Amino acid sequence: MVLDSACVFCAIVNGGISADVVYRDENILAFNDVDPQAPTHVLIVPTLHVENSAQLALISPTTTAQLFTVAAHIAAQRGLTGFRTVFNTGAEAGQSVFHAHLHLLGGRRLAWPPG
Image (spheres, rainbow, N blue to C red):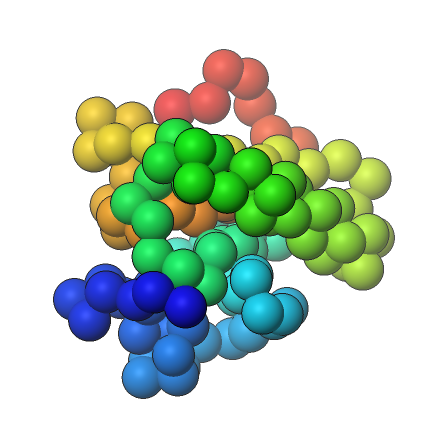
């Protein structure tokens, strides 16, 4: 597992910062967002440090797919009949932590277009 000592999500992955973890395996960690934008707002991150979703897709398509599988699993556990998954890639798109992460949002009606 490759981590970045300056990355807050890497610190969560290695246990240096606590989080409300809802799922963990060797490749994926999922935890409740500290500033939720919906009743369910979970961040799903790879356990290796990769800056964004585009890089993750190049490095590991399998891990990228696992993020979505975990999102569906958590949504089912929470009884969500609909949900949204979002990757923000780059500061201009709203990415504020530069460690690839998938947002799982649900539990309320979500408007379109977002943002």
